[in-house]
Length: 112
Length: 112
Image (cartoon, rainbow over all chains, first blue to last red; front, side):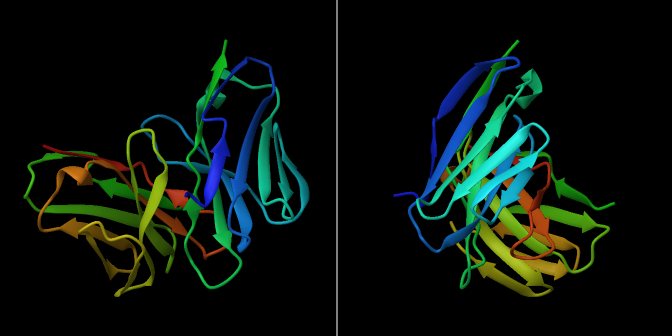
């Protein structure tokens, strides 16, 4: 079973709407989380990191972390067609491993 | 500014043939370097990791090997390609384990 699971697999939202993406870890050692975005044919690009419980906001993007439930979410407000991409949650253990584990991804489509 | 270059952009190779993919990072000394593999539309699987010249750690080998002959260069290779090697290969760098990773544009490999 994959250690970092994302939902939904795909999501469609209208332009200007709110997109909400979810990520759950099955490993309590994972303490550090990132959200990456990948446009078709390109390499992924980091959107934001979150290491502490609570919310972290950067522009239109807000990440939320709940370490007790091992749940991370990403909310995109005022979604734009350029936000259409594959979104990954990635997690790293607090110590003992240098591996970055990526989730299965959520394909977001923003409809004009 | 740091730049990451991958070569070639794309390759079509026969099963059983050798392969060498390259990655160069300019503008950053002694970065951590990574190789990833991605099936079409799939998640990213970390393959190799290097913190310094001559040192490479493997996560999943998939009949591949990696080397870091220079501080700014990371090479992925195999002597015999398998059909399962097809996919998108991504090189990335970071300042350290708990920093975001910066990905290159990738190399699309098709094995026939």
